[in-house]
Structures are given as structure tokens and as C-alpha cells.
Amino acid sequence: MKNTPLNKRFWKTVATRPEQDGFAILLDDRPLKTPLKAPLLAPTQALAEGIAAEWDAVEDKIDPRRMHLTRCANATIDKVMRERDSVARMLAEYGGTDLLCYRAESPEGLVKRQAAAWDPLLQWMQEAHGVELHPVSGIMYVAQPEEGQKKLLEKVQTFAPWELTAFHDLVTISGSLVLALAVVEGFLTPEEAWEASRVDEKWQEELWGVDDEAAEAAALKKADFLKAARLLDLLQG
Image 1 (cartoon, one colour):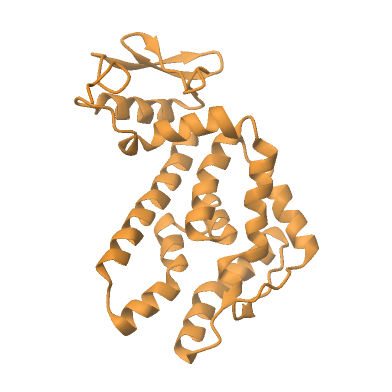
Image 2 (cartoon, one colour; image 1 turned 90 degrees about the horizontal axis):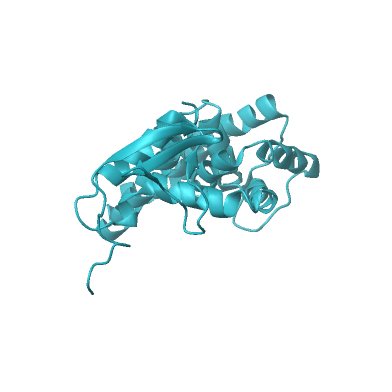
């Protein structure tokens, strides 16, 4: 397929510029737009510079897979801002099936390891947010206290659209609303949260060894998890 101006680098310079509603990213003085043709405006200078760096790094052909912040910007402006309430509700529902609540029935070593890694986080949720989450053994669904679920929804609804975009990846990649909140609020580092999400996988690796294909998939997920945490940092300026 022949390269076109839509997928091949056509600009010489990349810059940022403050605007009334944020910071624009300019390609040869032309401001970037989203796929739906909305102005692509970052809420902080740091994020705008991060997006600009992705475009400046393009050598020949545009590869969206290498432009995480740009993709997040497009998703935020074209989707999350338009569907904020539904996105928040979807993410809050993870609190009812949180990874940290579903425990192994055996072997004893794994049961103890899960408790050591996850019980302090459930205790933090109760102390910091007044949300009680009950761990259960097995994989059968068990409803969590309704009052706590309401509080989780109220908490998630306080996030601005850009924060929801980062939060979405933290939650969906880890499978845990608790771990995502712990990262957002600085209770855990992103690396600590990632390790906490991998207790079961680490146990299996110790028993049966590392599967190369699974390890590669996990590395990609970790990279995306850390990118979401970086987006949060850039949003804070």
C-alpha cells in the first residue's frame, strides 16, 4: 500500500502552544485534531509535551501503537468526555467483582500469599474510603455490601475525563478497582500495584516454570499499566 499524507510524516516541526482551554500540539503550526475533528487540547503543559514528543519521534510512517498518549487523548476527547457517566459506572462495577476479593481455596501456600498481599489493601479501602469488601473463597460470584458499592461509584464519578481514561486502563488491566485507586492516591507505586495483581501468576510460575508466551503477554500488559500511571503523572503537571 502506498504511503499517503495520512500515515506518513508530513511535518518538519512539532511544538506546543497554550490556548484558552488547554495546550495545543502543533505540526508545522497546524494544531492537531482528534479523529472526530475536535481540537486536541491537553489539560497540562507536561502532557502536551509528552504528546508532542510522540509526534516528533516519528521518523517516517505513523505507528499509533507507539503513540500511547495520543491515543489516550483521542479516546478522552472523542469518547470519555461524551460518555463520562457511563464510563464511570462501568469502572465502578469492578468493585463488585474485584480481583482481591476472590481467593483460592487451596493450596495453603497460595491462600496465605494472597492474604498477605491483598488483606492490607482491603483494610486500606475500609479505612480510607469507608468501603467494606469481603474476600470469598472460590470463583462463584458473591455480592458485596451495597453501601460500599455506592461509595465507590461516587468516588469514580469525581474523576475528570482525562483521569477516567488513565483509571480505565489501571482497572481493566489489573482487574482491580482497589489497586487502581491505590495507585491514583499514592498508597502503592504502579510497580507495587502490578506485582499485587500478579500473585496467582507468580505462584504458577514458581510451580511450573515460566511460559514464554504468557511472559511476553504479561510484559505487554505491564507496560500498558505503567503507561496509564504515567498519564496520571502528566495530568498532575
